[in-house]
Image (cartoon, rainbow, N blue to C red; front, side, top):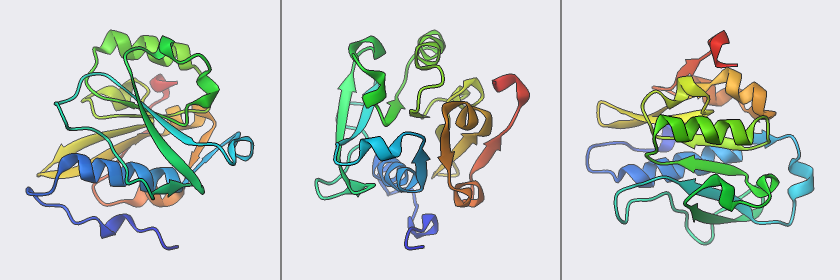
Length: 173
């Protein structure tokens, strides 16, 4: 396989969001959505929600593609702004209150959406992928139960990435 998660060089000088963005693209490339066949020839949509530092966001280069689809990053203020949740491939959550996360998770339910966050404790609350910093390195945790509930299939290689953590508690379902 051409994709390698070990290829990302990490050090204190590396832009955190460049790494998170690169990880996100690579994670999406090795993820399967239940209804993926119906989404061919459409834009790969990454919705972002919450507050983040000015100018510090998830981004992709214009020529980057996921599943042979161009990528569109769409900031929103509320999940209720999205008229059709089936159009969301990824929901990336910046800093939001726990209560808002709970509302989002309730609204999304078992929709076929990869939910990604960067908030401490959100992995245990039902986010599928949660980024965290450890020893100046970007790492991520995977909530296995949230993955199964969402009908999204992460490739097994994600579970073997150095520094990643697996959350697999029954209370997360």
